[in-house]
Image (cartoon, rainbow, N blue to C red; front, side):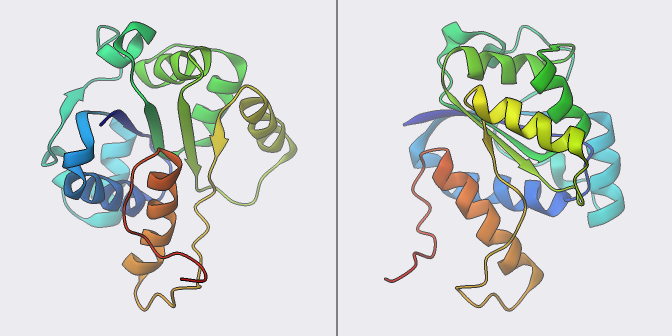
Amino acid sequence: MKKIAVAVTGASGSIYAKLLLEKLASLKEQITELSIVMTDNAKLVWQTELEDETYNNFEGRYFTTKDFSAPFASGSAKYDALLIVPCSMGTLGRIAAGISNDLISRAADVMLKERKKLILLIRDTPYNLIHIKNMETVTLAGGIICPASPSFYSRPQTIEAAVATVVDRAIDLAGLEAGSFRWGT
């Protein structure tokens, strides 16, 4: 059983967050606690890209980006993983610089200091040198950079199926068993 936090930033790629939250709902027997935090920009991007406001409909405890009393803002809460999906380059930069100015960057700092899983699903492309150096810094600190790059081994036939290959990978990285496609099986 895992304690999982999901953060959604304003990067394009709301479909990744939506499919992740749907998949986590189907894995609730593996999760003791699910916490969700979204930026205001994430909600706006979700509404623009997905043309709905379903971000409020998922099971879990919701927190604002200014709520530093959220349990995953402290290592004592013993959360197992924080997935930032999608992760904007601004959020990546603040994490790399150790700037904890909101709940998302504070929670990321906590995961790194506690040596827990910090998974950043970055979607922006192309990368500039600052992005690459920030990814290197977070990786050296113990975080996992998971680019939103779908795999095609399973021959996905829809956008959702292609996105699911990335979501399943992030879920695997968090230590949950999602029954995803395995190469060679």
